[in-house]
Amino acid sequence: MDDEVRLADGVRRGLEAEGMIVDVAHDGVTGLGMASDVDYDAIVLDVMMPGMNGYLVCQTLRDEGNWTPVLFLTAKDGEWDEVEGLDTGADDWLTKPFSYPVLVARLRALVRRGDRDRPASLAAGDLRLDPASHRAFRGDEEIPLTAREMAVLDFLLRRCDEVVTKREVLANVWGDSFDGDANIVEVYIGHLRAKVDRPFRRTAIETVRGVGYRLNGTGG
Image (cartoon, rainbow, N blue to C red):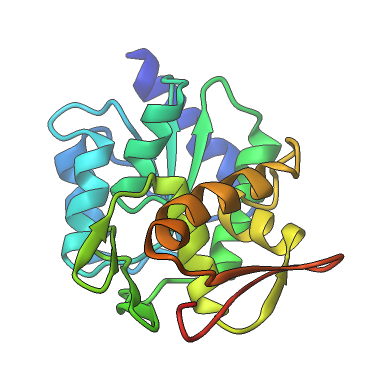
């Protein structure tokens, strides 16, 4: 039996032992057909699949308006691989070899969040973000953002005029299981200010001392 087939069957058995109902496809084309025809609570995609890779499967589902939560499994381990996965519309990412309890916990977290509606354009003044196309603008000028910068801005725009804590940003952008340095939020807030505020002489992203951050609904 092929190693990837063996892994898929092992994942199936492990998830079924946790009380989940699991369907398995061993190639991307079959998986895409199943995901298009069945209303799943969550989808686990291996990046390297025969016929059609996981990135393309996920991108096709999103293009079709299917926003079922997607978790990628991959042997690749690198920032740009994660960026590519997030850019195609994935919700979470797990590198092989992985812990089954972590996989189960992440899937449960995705299921709790539920399906995402196809995102509409988000705006604060002339600051605008189109989550579906992963494009951000100030007026008519497009602002190049990384996938993670886009995710932070998306969260701030959805909570426009509200104060959000650093912990809330971490949980919604990096995931509940993130155990790195929480100061990574400050780093990305700095990146965003350098791209969406300072070049346009704006101060939309505000720091609320001792609490967190707020995106001014006027766009600064």
